[in-house]
Structures are given as C-alpha cells and as structure tokens.
Length: 397
Length: 98
Image 1 (spheres, each protein chain N blue to C red):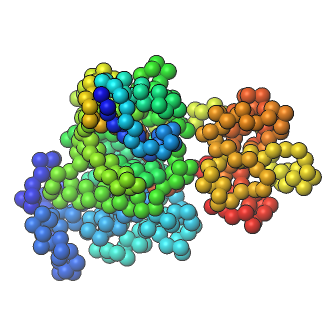
Image 2 (cartoon, each protein chain N blue to C red):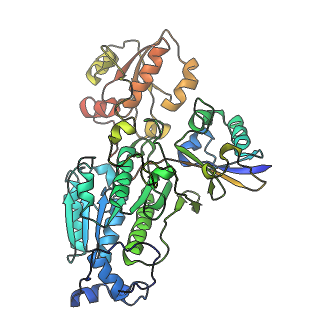
Image 3 (cartoon, rainbow over the protein chains, first blue to last red):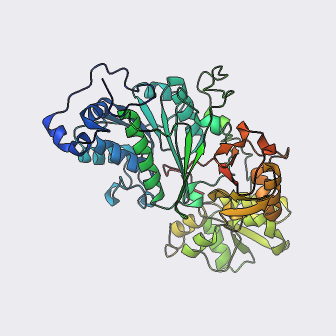
C-alpha cells in the first residue's frame, strides 16, 4: 500500500498484510481525518490496524489516551496499578470526582470506551517489571511512556529496544517538559541520552516539586501527535531530536540527539541483551536505612508534649508554599534543602521534633541534625497524620 | 566570551530562580566554572567528585551534545547558548509521598 506522505522509517505495521476496512459509522466518525491527504482512508485504516501500549494512565496518559482513542487507534493497552486519588484530578483529565478510589485502568477504560466504542481497550492492571515487560510489549506495535519514575523509564526503553519497538517518550517536572521518539532501530534510545540515572533523592518528584496541571496536557498531546504520525507513516517524527518545553516562559526548543556508538543496549555490539533489575540499576532501595530505636515519635506523643507544655522546638522542613497551606502553631520553618546551610541558626541545647508532609523528608533532616550533635526526633506520618488523628481543622493536601 | 547558560527547572532553586545566566568563558568547562562561581550551590548537582560533569547531566552547546564534540573542552563563542539537560521522570502522578 502507499502511505499518504510517506516516511523514511521502517513500517511499524509490516505485520498487517491486509488493512481492515472502515465501516459506514467509522467513515462518518473519522471524516475530518479522511479528507486530509496526510491521513486519508489509507492512514485511517492503518490507525485501525494499530496496537498501542500506554505505560501509565495519569497526567501524561490522560491526553494520550483521550486523543489516541478519539483518533481510532484499533487497540489501546493501558498499564497502571494505581488508583485515582483526589490530588490527581487537577491534571489527570481522564478521571472524574466519582472515580476517586477506583483503579485507574478501569476508570480510564470506561471513559475511553465512552469516547470511542469502535476500538478495543485492554486494561493491564499490573506493575510493569522485568518479568512481564517483553511479553506485554509483544502484543503491541508501539509503546508510549507516560510513567513517573526512573526505573520504569529505563525498563520501558530497554524492553522497546530489545523488541524493536518505538518508545514515544514524554517527561515533566513542575513547568518543564521533554518529548522525543526513542527507537533503537532508527536512531538513539533513552540510554544514548541518559546512560545512567541520577542518584535517588537528587531529583525531586512531582509529589515533592509539584507540577503545573496543564503541563502534562500539553506534553501528552505532543506524544499523541508523534504516535499518530508514526502509525500513519506521515510527517517528520521526533527521532533523534529532543523537544524541550518551558511552560512558564512559553518556549519550545529542540536539541539534536545522537546514537551512542557504545550504547549498552542499542549499539551494534550491545553489552546488555536482556532486561535487568532496574530498581537496583537506579539505586532504589540502596539508600542507607535511616532512623532506629527512639528516632520517631507518634503524633499522639507530640500532642501530649504540647499539652504538657514541654520544652521542645517543632522544626518544619517543608517548603514555604506547603507551610502556607497548613502548619502547626509555634513551629520553625527551614526547608530541607536549606537546612545544611542554616544549621547555625539552631541552638544545640534545644530539643527538636522534626516534621514534614508525610515523614520521609523530616527523617532525612532528623538524620542530619543527629549527625551534627543535635537532639532530634522525627514526627512519624508528618502533618498529615496530625490532621488525621489529632486536629482535623489542620487542612490535608 | 559571553555565553548564556540555560538552567533547567530542577536546578533553578540554586540560581535564585534564574532560568538563564550570562557567564564568561571560551570553553564549556570555563563557562560552567564561571556559572558555579556565581552560584556555588549548583556545583554538587553538576560536577561529580572527580570534577567532571556528572554522567546523568547532559550539556549542549546550541543544538549539540558536548559528549559527541570535545566534552568540557568544547569551545564556545560569544552569543552561544549552553544548555544543561537533566533527567526528569515525572508524568503519571503515582509518586511516593514525601
């Protein structure tokens, strides 16, 4: 068959010797695609024959799923093991208030089916790992990476390279996004750009750094655009190019990517020919165990101490923005990333109870204080536990 | 040589929220050294213990990765843009609680 605008890339749908025909209802539904020479009936039949696997149905997965379903991608696989949380709703536009608490793949499949009943939607409610990735990927032509952590990103990349499939990559942080098409057979892969992950804890997560709600909408829509071009076989895909988007300054930039001739997975002589342990590769779980006997107190103990007027200093290590949402009276605020520089402000004769939102950041701060000779304990469960168990008037966020 | 260094979002808290810093230098190493003189807190995020740019940080001069040029010795000219491209992983929203 001929593809409307043609493409220099390998045909993703080489397996489909005969493309499915469009029904009368499909002709009506897709008419605005069909009348465009760049898609046309041939391109729409290619979309119908296509099988796309989405990793993650959250911030990026929302627009990706909505647009790919609407565009008529024949089979859409959804991989997620998470449930919908209230704090997802400011950006994960697949979900409604009534979905809170439901598994994301179930709620997403329902919504996408409502948008387009003519396509096949398959829910994979699993945590993607090295034992299931290759088998899952085998049933699809292309993978879209909308995950939120380094181990899964390296896993998706390597499994795509090993199975010869393109990986349409998108990643976000606060108000900045990155998009590319990593395809070992045609250009560089993720590992060519980022051979090694950063050490755990160095790059804040969106849970810690926040994210502008509309950002995943824009970045995910760019990914959906690349998926559709690759499947139809039209236009210039983002292979060998990294698109950077800064939502705050409203700037797009593009950088050239090269294939690393020594890439361990996608070079001519790879040194890694199977999937590995990506948690270990990313150093997850290798951080030294923090804490120990007598390192933590429960919120009930803190309530008692405060009621008795005991002489302790409450040190809050969250950000000023979080502090503004909710805080306890008589606390000192020193954000964790400033603590090392501001230790001089603290009196070594004081006793500290350190708190953050849920506990992990304040545990790191407690470690730092103890290492420097201060008497400090961590508040287990953080401010959230305080709101839940002691004082419901302190807002939860 | 005045070159503009683009600071990515995750590192802006170490530059007083500046997204662009104008620095002096005729190689990437010299430009980054000047950047770190102006903003010393950036250093541990850009350089490893060996004094080299950390492996998970990419540096581009205009559109090109210095890894495929001459690394830190890559020359820069007035008006060039040096971009620091970090790994970011966000996207789905199921991150651990912090």
